[in-house]
Image (cartoon, rainbow, N blue to C red; front, side, top):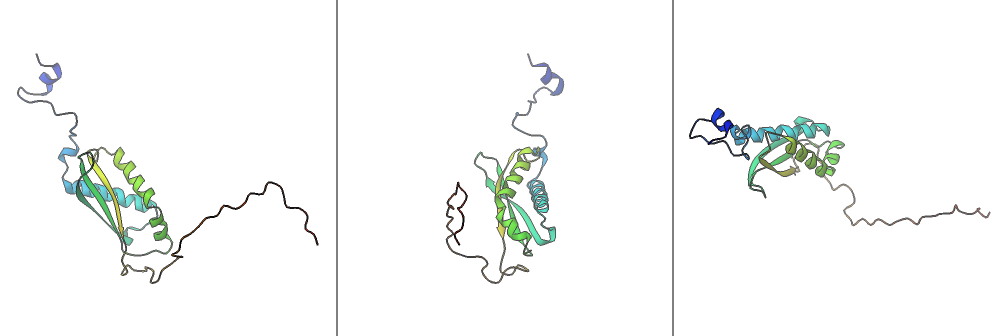
Length: 157
């Protein structure tokens, strides 16, 4: 005897879809998923005050992730170097990656995909990019300052 749900919703000979399949994601093409990832990445960059005309974002399928799901990676090419925004953007790459993973994890459309990460690229031809090395390319050592518990004594004159 078939369960009532199968008899009501499915014709004889048809089986219910496996629980792991999503009716939403199964109708999406690879290009649809790439476009959706691209919008997620652009919105995240926009929140970091990166203007859309300063970057080019591409998303490509990269194969299968560790769990066997289809994997996608984002590629961000810097078209214009903003001396204030760009260093902050590059310094916060792990934060951006985490935000994108959070959105992907909450998305019904991307539930059966794996996010492989972001790749950033800036060339010497990027408009406004530095032409010489900035900062100190040396080993930085942080020394703990001694902690004084009692205030310094009177100054002898």
